[in-house]
Length: 237
Image (cartoon, rainbow, N blue to C red; front, side):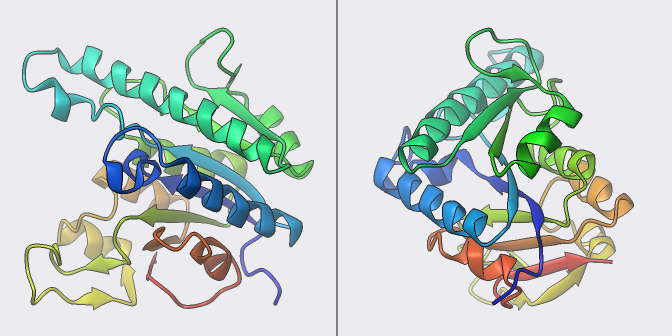
């Protein structure tokens, strides 16, 4: 089956990397994600990835009012860099060339983010892992994913989450919550649905980037979404 989306930006939460442990890494699960991405590359996909840092530090949420917002956010950026380094090495063990690009200068961790170089890597079949968010406090990794997707000219943003789509409410708290097959950016914003933060949603909308929300519990879902299978929820105009 041919790919519906050729160049994509995948946003993976840091929590997803930890599996059932909640913190750190579930290496077996990370390996399965990397193997799924490898299969997509072999089919001709070009893939950039933004990873959150929640398996180590959730920014201001973990600061508990004791750590200033700017410091808390920068700690979160460093957590994403650690995740990028770990996933890069797992990719390489799977036989995939992966490069880390960071939004802050961190010697020995990755290259400073450069859009032209990132696109060169993608076109050469390499996975690009974008670390440190946007490089600025007050912006989430969701916003970083939308920004990097726009910069590299992605066909879509793949939002790989611990939940299998967009619901009218949190299905873990509200048993009457209804799952959407499709929903518009405007409705996401007006209903304040927890898909991405409002900045990221607006950025995706302004750049006409469809967002596909799906469960990462089965890593093979990445390939299914790229091939156009209707799983999860499509957020679009």
